[in-house]
Length: 310
Image (cartoon, rainbow, N blue to C red; front, side, top):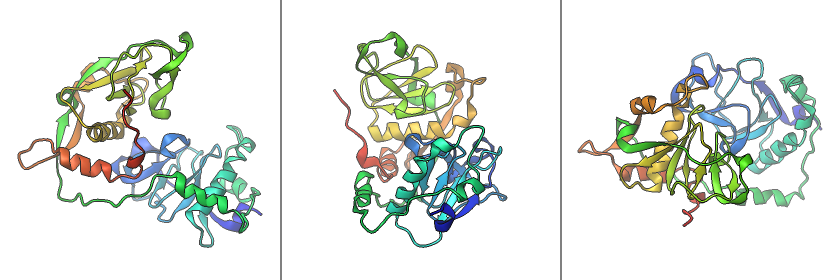
């Protein structure tokens, strides 16, 4: 059967991610990766279309993800997202089933033949039968949702990163110059927590620390002792001991500001000293670790964080 038999097909309507202020609505763009296609959180513009029902979101290159509402898909530049909203009630497992089958057909599309609504409508897709009980295993593979804690009473203040971290240039070798091994090599990649692979080089940096990619602005918490490529990576070492939850909080807030950096405006030690992030504070105007822990540990997927390897 055709996708149009199962879904309403709508084109995304929004500007680019960099045209938005930071906010609370997930912005979905091309790609899959570890963020399920979400590149950040924004404040939608008045002319944009926010989707308020769970749906399958398909990129211009036929990368299908399941997005929980609300979300704002990328719509600018002629290569925007296509959103599939079920015509009849479906479970979340059903949506994952259809998204997987759409991904299997990405070979049909390319830069010269991108996904558009009309092409997607006519795409043939398998309809599951009542015997697809294995699909129920999907819910066991995903982190369990957690109950959100109240955060409206938390006070915040803008704090310079240089007050919290020492910045160090990455050290190591390039992947192609190394033998395989067990040490994570952090590179300028947005996937797999920034780890390009594992090499036979002794660790240089001791976890936990934050790695910061100078061009993209992506920040990751490294949970294993690691090395980096020689260029384009900074390592942020806490000036005082921090819990894993505090590091994840800082990394997420740094990444939210990634729009400030690009190939022609890389992160530098001078720019780092001027960069500030919003931190919870207590009644004495000091950083509040309990508030940070409450914010971080109530997020979806926190129970999947691996302990630090020693």
